[in-house]
Amino acid sequence: MSILVDSGVLLRLTIPADPAYPEVRRAIKLLKSQGENLIALTQNVAEFWNVCTRPSTARGGYGISVQDTVRKLRLIEKLVEIRPDSLRVFQEWKRLAVLHSVKGVQVHNARLVAAMIVYGISNLLTFNGADFKRYSGINVVRPVDIQ
Image (cartoon, rainbow, N blue to C red):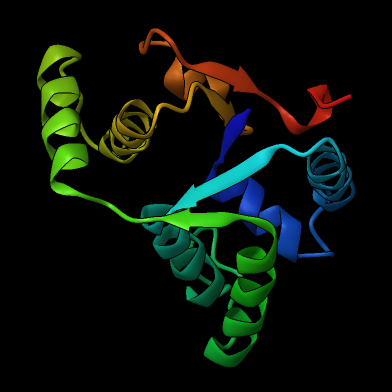
C-alpha cells in the first residue's frame, strides 16, 4: 500500500523537541517495518523547507539553518520516496479547485489530493484530516492510528 506523508508529519519526524515527535517516529517505523511505500511530493519538501528555515519569530517557523535543514531532508529522503509534480497533477488540481471552489491556503491541500489521484494513492498520513474531508476517495490516517 502507498501512503502519502503530509508536510506536518515530515516536520515532526525530524524535530525531536516537537511533542508529536515520538508518535510520528513510532508510526513511520511501524509502517516501514510493514513494508508500506511512504511517499512525499516535491510540494511537501518545499513546505518542509519553508517551515524549517522560517525564523522562529514568524508564525510556525522553526528558525533552523539551511545546513541543518539539508541534514533533516536527507533523513526524509532515506525514509520516504519523493515524487515530482507534473502537468497531469496540475490539470487534476485545476479540476479539483474549480469543482470544490477551493480558496486560499486550501489550494495546497488540493494539490496534494490531485497528486494522490494521479499517482493512485488513496491513503494520507496527516494531522489535518479535516482539511481533506471534501475529497472523496481519500483515506485519512493519523499517526496515532497506526498499529
